[in-house]
Image (cartoon, rainbow, N blue to C red; front, side, top):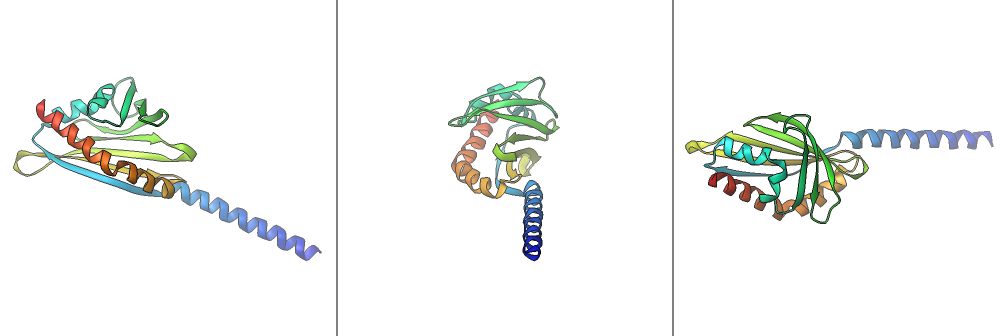
Length: 170
């Protein structure tokens, strides 16, 4: 009887260790969702002005109902967005290099995070390239990434196109 009790305890210990290892690996999992790049004649300043105007983002992001920024736009800034058909989500600007790019992190259910890296780089012919690069991380990343890709597949390219169009109009 003691042998079975020891085996049972050993099995519980192994399962516990596997669960802990899985949780740790899950928190470190990072999955690319998609990247959209567009060339533009707009200046860095014209693009940056649209990015930094967080409450005005619904002008170029059709999926966005509203956005709120707490304080100045920059690294460490926080706020909240409301997407169509979604509950409000908090975000944090984790990186901000004016006229070059920024990253905002959205907090998802069950410890998930979605990072949106926005960059402006110089391109040939006096143009710039605007890039939106989306990545999901955390314990639910492997589940959320395909879902987010399906949602963003059509919407994100249109959003970037509209941003570029508005920036070019100045």
